[in-house]
Image (cartoon, rainbow, N blue to C red):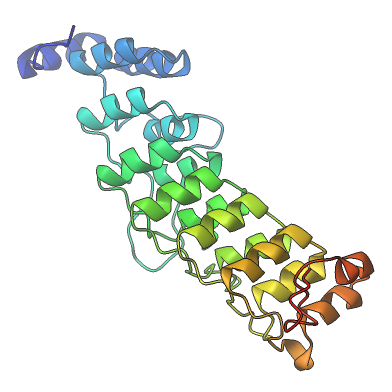
Amino acid sequence: MPLPRPRPRLQRLARRLLGARLDAALLEAVEDWRPRRVRSLLWLGADPRGATFRYGIPSLVCRVARMGSDEILEALLDFGADPNDALGPPDGSLRQWGPIHHAALKGRGSTIRLLAARGADFLAQANPGWDPVYIAARENRPEALLALADVGAPLDRPDGDTGETPVMLCARRGFLESLEALLSRGAPHSPRTPEGATALHLAAAGGFEAACRALFLAGADPSAPGPFGSTPIRAALAEGHDALAAAPGPSPAEPRRRRGL
């Protein structure tokens, strides 16, 4: 049964009589994962914006986004919580992570969609220069990457610290599912490092056969020159991945024969 509309006079009275006890009870209800109790406490006047949290997480709404409890998060937002809580002003300096950054970290796809629908800034680059897409890629969270793509987040923004794009990161680390998620939503398949290496060079140098194949099938050029004119196959051989160079399938060394990594 839904609660009646909040009564401001009742909320002010409860706030005056109970004060910090309401906020403490709200924190406890969140930790116990009790959405109905959370909504009841908010109705009584508990403050969803004033509560801080432990574990180094700066606010209650960030904690809930990290947990992935969409029902609790929706209640907090309904009662005035800021979908960009803790993010800080966009003054050019590195900012704290907002709720959507925490959701991306844990791969909470539905939470990302909820936050974006309520106005969360999915473009914000927070400390140390990562936006939510880069965070999801770094943590190998394909569901979060798909959700961010669905709400319109750009998939090719470089990391503000190193200049690495999400596709480059996934190729370098061999995160196949996240790489495929990015490529399936139209992320560029051949971004280059400042030295000139493509994502295919990075995957080959790491010995990641499946990632190489995914990039090849997405349209990456296996004969594209990299640093000092090297091809991806030479990058694999230089790092001791002889088995990758000899594997059957479309080979970057022999694109016309379409043998493969």
